[in-house]
Amino acid sequence: MKKVLITGFEPFGGATINPALEAVKRLANAELNGGEIVTCEVPVTRYESLDAIIAAIETHKPDFVITVGQAAGRAGITPERVAINVDDFRIPDNGGNQPIDEPVYVDGPDAYFSTLPIKAITKTLQEQGIPCQVSNSAGTFVCNHVFYGIQHYLRDKQVGHGFVHIPLLPEQDTSGNQATMSLDVIVEGLRLVAQATLDNQQDMVIGAGQIC
Ligand code: PCA
Image 1 (spheres, rainbow, N blue to C red):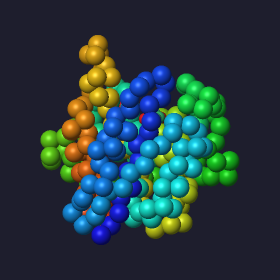
Image 2: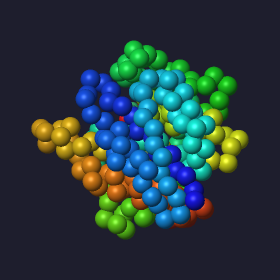
Image 3: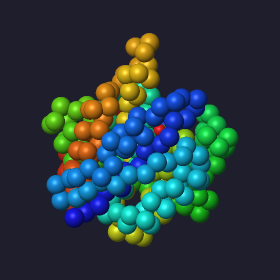
Image 4: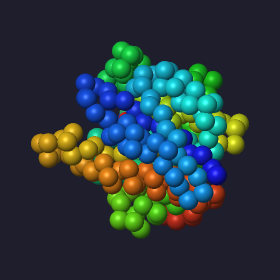
């Protein structure tokens, strides 16, 4: 039995809801084919976010970690390809931190790539009718910070990790101006992300690049 830790952020920026947290509440203790899901809630605060996830990794000793956050405006579930060593916060985080062009870790490399099978994940979700595409930027706020910081923590450990952004819930944009996805679809999508991670020890070599 493999163990997959899925983490979800609390609300931020004055919001009262974060789909990532709502989804992980539903995924707690869910069974996978050959594995199980454990979860943890993450503060949207610069280094406290990393402390919470590292504590959960040390408690649960997962085989894989999938960190999840919301990305307003995105229409699909988006496994991120790359984390960069930059904190450039357009708004303060929930602890009031607003670094500009600071590294996550001064002595870290410029970037880390996801160690999840992001192409296989994308194919799996698309085949099940769930909008999904590889993203090449996790931004420069707390999601990228967590993606980078957890890759750095796991760099010499045999634990796969990647970050997945999810769309807003319909109730987060009642003006109808932004793309949204229902919680049921997000939850099923994240369950499939975890299952595809267990099922694909090697990623698939299939095109999912973008032309600007
Ligand atoms: N999304 C933010 C941080 C927390 C979240 O859910 C981001 O994309 O950085």
